[in-house]
Image (cartoon, rainbow, N blue to C red):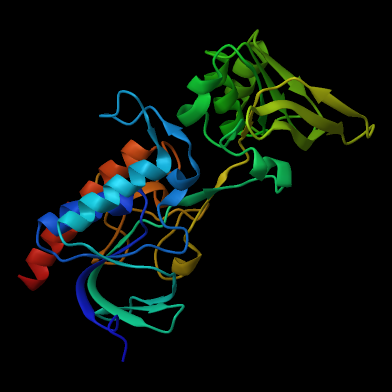
Length: 315
């Protein structure tokens, strides 16, 4: 039997800002938490270059460095870490059972789910090559780096319109690139974007390639009109992909109550899910803010909720 086939008071799934903050609070509450970090340890901040909007870092900090510090803080208080992914959960009876891909089985009295959400990408090699070097999936996170520049936004829903309007406050120009000839976003958001003097539109258009150089980053964008097949190049130095996020919740389908987009439903003002003893924090239950600082805040909430729930049920 593996050393990991043990019964724990609290297991935390995910090692982004939410999971690691939950671990810090839980460890300081002497809950001896175990973090299952997943194959992509550290969450989305691991592919983020500079983080300038997290309190306490006046000079900014690299995303991977921030996650390294958060993990060190969790380790300081006794958090244990297990790498790998959970492939199956059983909430039908207590203790809860979690099966890992390496065949280990973990048992726990309570569980905090902080598995995050993944941005949807276009699937281009050049998009991946220039991620963090001109290509982003979060205007709130990275827009400041593109002030007074010409940028593009891909998408046609409310997310894309919100990103475009946010960027228009600081960029020289914003071009919304949409594969259809009409937007899918709400009418009021459409009107705001169409009426904005800094926002223009490429209709019936898809991105073909992000161009630039590895040192200097993105320098231009090649797009194609899907009706005429005409290809053109534009001197954009930033590209924001705004075609939505997918919460990492497939594991919990039919196990927890999810909303229509797959996000875990929690009791408002708490991190309680539809199963007692199971809590959710971070982007896995937040489709609105999706920031490191809000994820950390809900991680704190989840640890406190779990600690109080364990005290009530297990003493």
